[in-house]
Length: 100
Image (cartoon, rainbow, N blue to C red; front, side, top):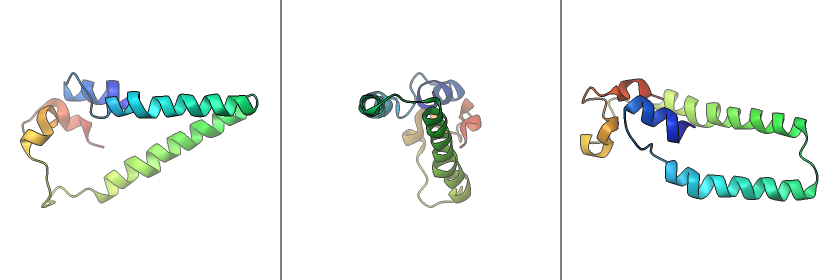
């Protein structure tokens, strides 16, 4: 959802960074994992709730919080406008609302 819909829509781009990684890596691994777990026995409602809590917790505490806490707008290692493409905030694009 984030890579394929949210980020491209907010940035006004046709493609979101990481879409191919999601489609070619995360999705097949997730399907394989669920298949393997399902072969061990039925996946119950509690298992889905625990998984959802774990996924949300990982997204918040493993991605969002570190990005917000450790960001440095004055970093000497800033991306160039060419590297940022349509996500370049300096160009005044719609990407200003994409900050994580």
